[in-house]
Amino acid sequence: MSQWLSIAEIASKVQKGELKAVELVEQSLTAIAEKESFKAIIATTEERARARAVSIDASVASGKTVGKLAGVPFIAKDNFLVFGAETTAASNILKGFEAPYQGTAIEKLEAEGAICVAKANLDAFAHGGSTENSDFFTTKNPHDPTRVPGGSSGGSAAAMALELAPFALGTDTGGSIRQPASFTGVVGYKPTYGLVSRNGVVAMASSTDTIGPLARSVDDAALVLDVMAGKDTLDSTTIDRDATSYANLDTSLAGKKIGVIKEYMDEGIDEDVRKSVQQTIDKLEQAGAEIVPISLPSSPLALAVYYIVCPAEVSSNLSRYDGQRYAYSNPDAQNLEESFSKTRQIGFGKEAKRRIMIGTYVLSSGYYDAYYKKAQTVRTKLIQEFAEAFTQVDFLAGPVAPTPAFKIGQNSHDPLKMYLADTMTVAVSLVGVPAISVPTQSVGDLPVGVQLIAPQNKDRALLGLAKATEELV
Amino acid sequence: MSKLTREDVLKLARLSRLSLEPEEVDAFLDEISEVLGYVDQLKDVSTTGLRPTTQVTGLTNVMRDDSVIDYGVHHTDLLRLAPKSQDGHIKVKRMIG
Image: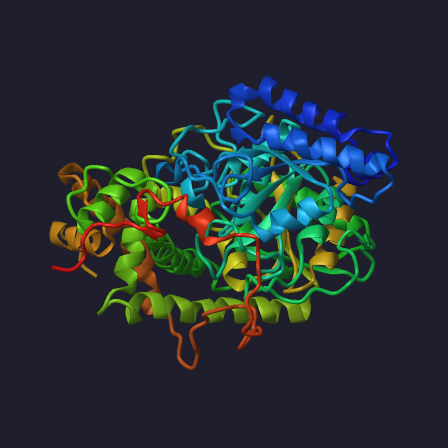
């Protein structure tokens, strides 16, 4: 039994004056304090949250409409620029940085009455799949504190498993919402690329970065998505949405064709994970969906494409952290060159440096064509294969990750091994289609998620399928 | 592709404006070589007739009116963030001469 009502119910009760925003904020802050040992949270925005709650309750009392998320507390991954606390992206290079503006997604949520109460831990700059790359501390999986919560949105996912707030925000560039959602047993949604503005979110790989909700139910995630989605003049890669709410879901399965991705169910994935995912697929079939085997033959190449394209874009995006305009600046530098390089040497963690250097290599003169341009061309192959698959089926399905949550420290000494765990999430990111992780049968005590995928701009349909799946599991 | 050399790593560090400690160079050398060795498999993939994808939205020429919009963030808000500033400017180390 969750300590929170559904988001729609909370907002409705706050709007009617039956629930007070100030109490909801306290409920969240208390939960955060009680579960501190899991280290999901970097900082709270408690002062500002309390002030916003007072103002929301006052608006309600004076008869004003607050919004679809009236009084609903939420937690933002610490790569979202938010007022009321530092924005660090879990990196020492941004320690002390106070955002001068908030991201568009945050502004939209606040316009509907939602209240940010805290910033969640992540792998620094979202580089990672375990949250062990945070420059500050590792978050513990609420189901087993000796294990990782996944990453890079590990703090957000753990916060949902711990019920610290009704929803959290994450970012997914190669799987960073879906995989931690799978590892912690919550719903994690990656929208179609461009559906939610990236303005005001620390950039990682700009051609695949997406923003999405983590929550304890598909309905909750859908409502949050509905508030955040839409074209933004501040992000020219945003796409149009239609006027229908993303919370308006069709859960009927009759006539729906779901392609099970053969390459994702093959060897290399944990047998128990495969069984759990297959079980859910079987239930979907029994409930009326048509299950079709689908092959995406270029699947084994997706990881190589991703680990060229992503570091390349990271190396470009992280060049702005130069110690001149904001945040950490090395005080001992004797000249401009040292000011840049000492700042970055001390400020960046190992994984950031690794990715910057790999990116620099694949973009450098003499290597650009063989690596970056080649990778972007193989990316076209992946896009074509997904498009072809979607002429035969309405959705695709498979696991999210090859294993449940692994032990803290197990993969952290081996960067390539850590990257290999992303094998089933990166293709979706490169292609730009929406995908969701919905909890299925656990393996022992450890949660497992099933990944459901839809064509570009079919987010509403995907959420409908996800809700149907949730009801069956 | 042959394994990277220490010189390669130092060059990458210079290009990326990172001043690495000597011990770090060897660790990065191994790790980066391993990753590059893995991604090398793409060189054998046939991509004849395919063009590179640079963005997945299909959007082109996204324009807006050339008019100033006040978003409520002003240069004073931004200057406040600078490690060193003077007379309304961000102050940096000498660049020329």
